[in-house]
Amino acid sequence: MKTIALALLGAILATPAAAADISTHVLDLARGVGGTGIPVVLFKRDGNGAWQQVGTASTDANGRVRTFGEAKAFGPGNYQLRFDMSRYPDAAASPFFPEITLTFRVTDRDGHYHVPVVVSPYGYSTYRGN
Image (tube, rainbow, N blue to C red):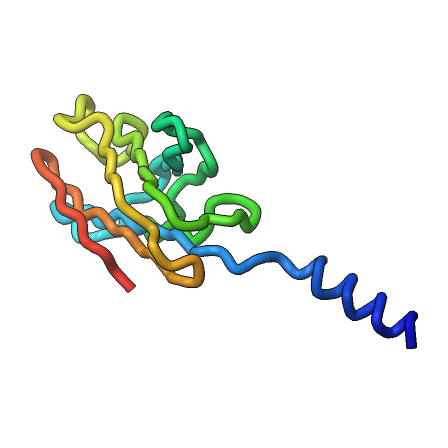
């Protein structure tokens, strides 16, 4: 009986805590396609107000980032997505916005946070997707 109880306790302790899921999508409005090959860095604000890098990725062939590396505990707090538009291979030689920074708040540890950005040569827009 003790062996079963210890095995069950070990399984419970080894189960990762729930974590918010963060994803993004770059949509190129001028070309009507997803923005491919764009480096994206995810930051979280720490208790001292400084931004700490917690993940990196590049947009895929459809302009999406589905995950930021290994599953991490993206708990409640303030986050930033930073898009390096200067590295977007299909952008103008010198983009007007070389970096796009989106700041948002995670409130639900179990939530899905999809934060797309729609880009054009001289502007961008964002919203909370699903």
